[in-house]
Amino acid sequence: MLSLNHFLVLSGILFSIGTAGVFLRRNLITILLSIEIMLNAVNLTFVAVGRYLGTVDGQIITFFVMTVAAAEAAVGLALVISLFRHRETLSPDAFTTLRW
Amino acid sequence: MDVIAFYVFAAIAVVASLLVIGQRNPMHSVMLLIVSFGALSGLYVLLDAPFTAVTQIIVYAGAIMVLFLFVVMLLNAHTEDEVVPPTLGPHGMKVAVVLSLALAAEAIWAFSRISPTVFSNDPGLTGSISSVARIGAGIFTTHAFAFEVTSVLILVAMVGAVVIARKEA
Image 1 (cartoon, rainbow over the protein chains, first blue to last red):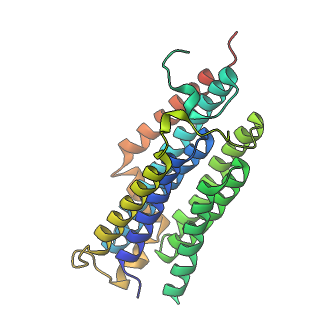
Image 2 (cartoon, rainbow over the protein chains, first blue to last red):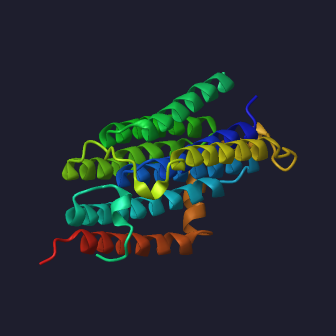
């Protein structure tokens, strides 16, 4: 029988993988992808807790998280394109100064 | 049966996510992330949330990942810079791995100890939470304000993305 803890532990593992991606990768696009992994881990938590509480609120919050993820991806990728135009690289270590 | 499906989908999601952060080629990373999202959508079906599962496929795998693919192709950056960044120090990578593993261990420990008394496991509930009608009623009544704010957010994000990515005149 599946319990809530199964889904919560899986979600914790996925969130840690996303965090590791943000720490370890030196590519802006992969870092944004890692953030998407973390958002999905949180979505899984919302849906699982909503299911075991017997409400649809978990699923509704998931839709809002998806919307925010779409907005974040659009703005983030626009920033990546803009940065790439200026420095011809995607390494975050090339953008350590606040100067343009 | 449910348990087997859960472990299969969980294994696919974890392995695909690990490969996403283990790839040097961003194109492969995006493709593997779509695989991971497919597995998550299977898990949503197991959680009696078929509408969320379909939305996950259409919105995430269909729309957001296509946006990522467009940018990867547009920038034509197929490999990551090989140089080890000087800012990270000699042991930076090891510290990052240890910190991530510590976070994973902490999350697993905490989540596996949650007492199930608050949460019912009554199958009688599940018929009502998979109903699209109830989800729609919830969005347009209780969460109507958040829903309207979401539309403003999308508008702002759209205008912002266009302004940021615009070529300087």
